[in-house]
Image (cartoon, rainbow, N blue to C red; front, side, top):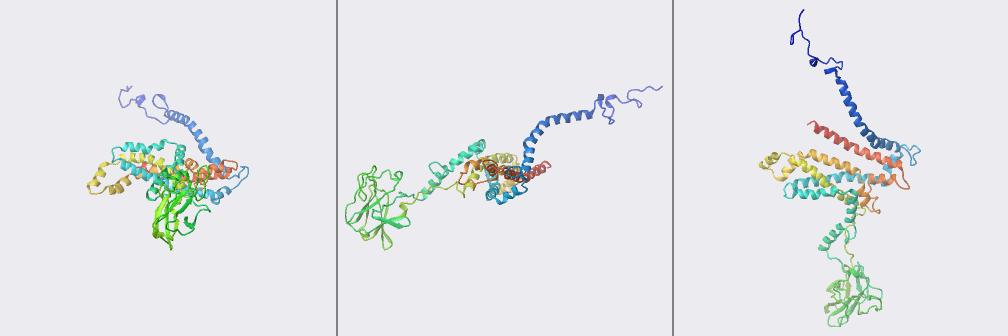
Length: 460
């Protein structure tokens, strides 16, 4: 009888060395298939709540919205494609589609470009971190708060709206504002309309005969602060006169008469016109008295329209033509910081030796930026751009809050139109569901592009 020795040719392999024969029996009688199956069961158990929530909050609303978009307003009858036809025939919805296209093209592009510029420039200054913090800070503000802020910024009145306060300040720096807007003479006054907003005397003036130029309608706030009580001009060899506010507080004054409590129109411009030409010009003093040379004898006195021009009141930021660009500006203010932070992170990962090599080879900073920095940042720029495009397709808060009721139709976007159509006394959930489906169809291509780009990056 041959005895099997350890390690001998006829010896059987140890139990822990025996190969798996595919029967599911492994070391110590354990089943690999059983372990794998257990792991899959545990994974499925953990994923099940998430899948249920995903189905309840995402899949079901999408399916039901598609279903509801084929029903009529009441939801009881089949409407076919009528709701989708309304998307292209209703003028309000067409405006929303057009504005959404404007948003998708301009808002992400401007925010990304500004973010790129900020990210590149902040690398060259000491206080770059503080600057990034300031630019990124609007991201901490909700859309609701940002909308309220910019509703005040775009306020028409310069004393309340920051944008118009700046516009009026710049305008008045280069163009002198009117002194007495809306001032005008009464029929009993010796003045008449002269065309173009000016006023002229009814009769020619003579040297030595004082001229009266009374006006009414001057807003108290527009009266010069250093205006003095008006004085009646005295006769002399020149042409003299008085321009004053022919109005006595509390009543009791007489028209065409300089009363003690009436103020002179300081700064009012008076022109002497003879044969259609201006032969002399004078400015009324604090007491309203003005003097023209005797050579102006026989001329008509004219108060030019510049005295009464309406003051520049700024830009109508929330009017029909500028409301959409204005709201896009508020969006860029919020999201440029987001773009800057992502691009700065990508910029920090660029190989510095490559940039330095380009500079050593003679490339200037613009060439380095255009030919090296931007191409190497292309993946990051694509991420930022696509993210913002998806974000602006569902923009709602800013438009709803900033645009006033008078121009909300001009600033309308699809998300806002979805809200306006689906809620209210005349709600049409069929059309509202069709708008929701349209928004989904617009987002899907952008999402597919993003997924394809991510997969492409993962294969590198």
